[in-house]
Length: 340
Image 1 (cartoon, helix red, strand yellow):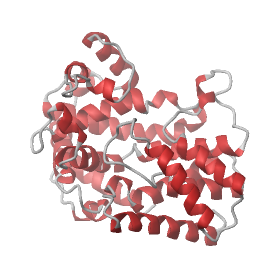
Image 2 (cartoon, helix red, strand yellow):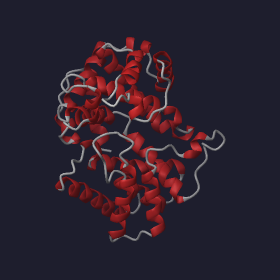
Image 3 (cartoon, one colour):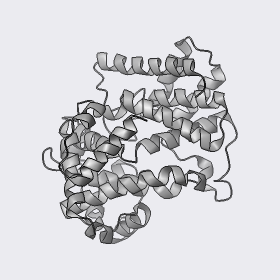
Image 4 (cartoon, helix red, strand yellow):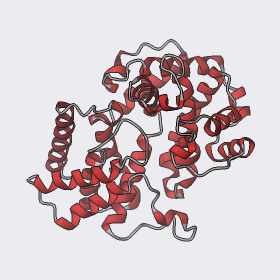
């Protein structure tokens, strides 16, 4: 970004908002902390460079990245409405701030944040999915969506998912995985396996991205799948095992995992397993080929970060002393990522 003064002011506003939430006892998760917001904001600039954004569009995308998680509950329940609440809060903060942002620009940021978890609608049109979107709202939405999903892949997500999914969402007393009967100090790696397949197959599959983004996102998915395959091998699981859990594990109200997450999928275990395999790239053959080192490295990663879910992710990565060779490689790559 060319405007360093703008960058610094937005970053300070974002950091101040996270600190305000902490002081109010709102329980800011490390997976939605200053580090995450900063990374998403920076990644919007990479998306902007791919799509030829103007300097001003990059500035506004950067702001959207900093405030997209202004409100974040400790679960992944789509009914909570974090996106809408974050959009309203971002409008309030940016209107109050001493920055020259027009009301139209603020509304474009609100538009992007409200839709941060939704695929850009033109991606579903095979004739137009490779086009550059027109209009500030759509451009900011594109930048924020891709940047946030990039943060959910790659080497850092190995630590982040272990900490958030197996930590906040299982070890915490309010963790939503407990609603399905999963137990702390027992099922950490299992819930990471389940969540990973949900994301790779339904929530953020690699196949959704236009060709122009493949060089950017492809390597990130390769790293994540490697980790997921390791978790599966370490737990001696197959894809069908997770498919069965998704359909048969239910809350006290009788809803299974897919229903709670509002994911439409086959209700037959075999059909569901086949769909997951085709969309996620995680196969039983791939699991069987995993080395002992990769399997043990994946499990030790989940154990380390989930057991320290209330700590700062950057510091935890620095202090981590992994035993597995693959885990040591992941740590080095995580540190490199943190450095930018």
